[in-house]
Image (tube, rainbow, N blue to C red; front, side, top):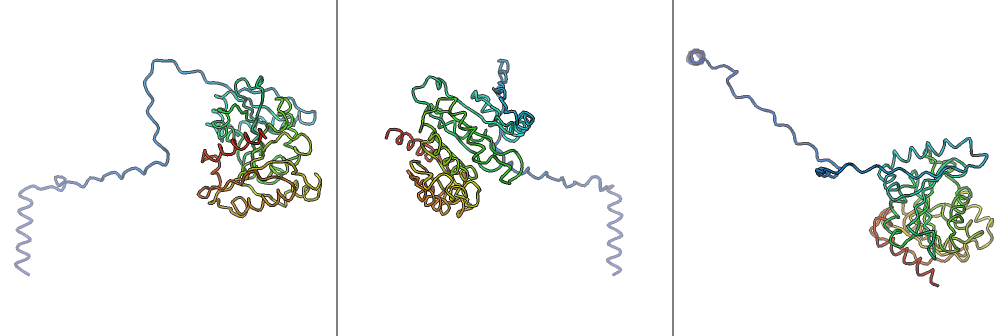
Amino acid sequence: MTRALIALTILVFITAACGVSTSDLPRATATPAPASPSREPPKPSPRPTDAPPAPTRQATLVPPTLTPSGAASARGWEALLAQAKAASAERYQFAVEQGAQIVPAADGKSFYVLWLPKGFATASRRVIIVTLHGHASWAFDELSLWHPFAAPRGYAILALQWWFGEGERIQDYYLPHEMYPIIERVLREQNIARGDAILHGFSRGSANSYAVTALDNSKNKYFGLTIANAGGVGLDFPSNVEIERGRFGARPFAGTQWLLFCGGRDPNPDRDGCPGMTKARAWIEKYGGTIALFLQDPEGDHGAFHRNPANVNTALDLFARLQTK
């Protein structure tokens, strides 16, 4: 014990004599943690250029022609358009760059986006794709998705904004009997012949495509093909209830041609996936429709129709074959 105390005392004197300070001891330096990898792809650095910036194109807004009852609600479509531009900015800009028209609906509640290929007005045969977006979505999304396939074929695109921007109730969307007059008016203005339009609906848009097709088949027969994309028949939908009650006759789909699409990995298989669309097939056939093709993508999810270009081209090739019959 005494020896240990003596040794400790000697060590203290030696340290003091050498003048070692804690400030002279190397300090541990904290190494910054590596930044978490971004989920966004890296943006390329801008290339130097001497050219002045290109002027920003503006949307082609067609002045509204409102019905007397809709004039007071004209602000509705403008607010909805502003919301759509903010929510789908890149696809809105794409529509602008392609020269699409943004046209208010006659009731002032909403708008549609109309893209016409060059020379469409004088084409010997004018084909147009009428497309209904899914739930809580935007017309600009549909235009962006369809344009790469429609443009090479010279097909026009009509994308209706049929959701009013908030809510998921039936009344937060146009009902089929409300949206069809908007579609009908555009097709008439563009001189679309019987059978030269394609109706496409995705998800909730598909669920409404059944009644829209029945309405068209009872009046104009514009639709040469209906593409029901991952959205089964809701038998509780008021318009589908009317079909079952015979509003359009015993065979409301007689003479209509259909392509049904489903993804094998749809998260709601019984409603929107292959089991749900199999039920839709039986329902359409029950009321006189013809399933020209039931396209199933085994590895596809809910949005696989447009994610796999082969699916879209298969649908458009089918339409072309139907036109030649």
